[in-house]
Image (cartoon, rainbow, N blue to C red; front, top):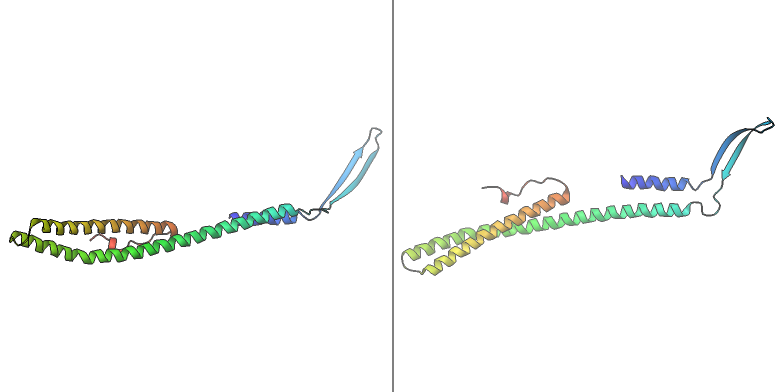
Length: 170
């Protein structure tokens, strides 16, 4: 709407450069009761600047509005592309973490069995368990980042987008 409004202002400034004409009917009486009637025609001819300064200002304002719109559209496209790239990267990282979890769980289970059979020390069990817990914490942080990236994408696009399957409750 702003651009259309400014376009109308430019048109008005262009129309203002043409001669203004006015016609008036006059009737007058003086102190001796003499009555005169007539008409008056006035033409205002813009000889020098023809309103060029105002036209140039309005055109520059219109161009600035167009440039600002294009800049905002470019920024929105850039934000959307960055959010999509982040989502794809986080999806890959979550998939890798999901693949590692069963292996770490199996390692913790075998370390626990080894400790119970006195074939390994408790430190190796707690190290394996710590690695498993760190991987789970990393997975939660990645899911949080993925939610933030989805929110950023929704904000940049201005639309609601369905949630990623990796974030669905299991």
